[in-house]
Image 1: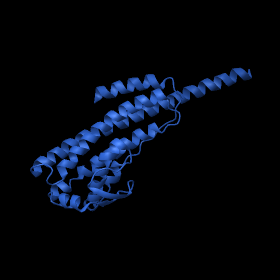
Image 2 (image 1 turned 120 degrees about the vertical axis):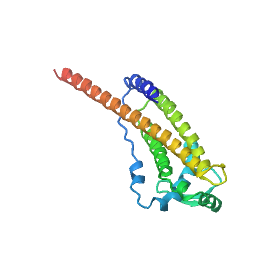
Image 3 (image 1 turned 90 degrees about the vertical axis):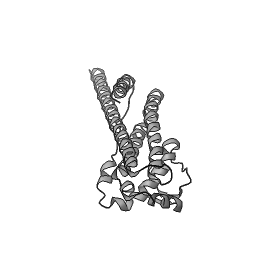
Length: 216
């Protein structure tokens, strides 16, 4: 992951040197989930969001999968769940179903996609810069997609024959990988934002010098 970051930042430096861009900000959802005192109450809707995100990570806001019906509002986490999916989840032990890391895994995924989308929406990004950004983002999101698919198998009864301890270990491993990707994404986006701001400062300095010499 460190080598990926170094390569990405080096390429960012090269690409952004020739471009005029504005800064991008990444919104952090992890703290929002941590602050929930009644996390168990919201767990089912968060798991529903996870199932939606299996499709979202690949196809944007397109709804896929047979385990849910209607999405009311993806941003607020209000979902109607298929009864069979709820029943399957309830058969998993409370220790597994109530693991706080499940909600955090989803929070990291939301954070990762939102951060990359913030950069993508930059109106001054050229084709070359968007292509590179997409290359990095797609690689990270594809890896997240695979982990979310694995998580869905682990937390749904009947999908995999596993003891609770094994399920918890798999959840912990997925959580750690997602946390690493979230940290990389934030570093990547923060460094990109810094390079953008530096370029803007340089351009303003050049423009001020040009105006000065035009006046004199």
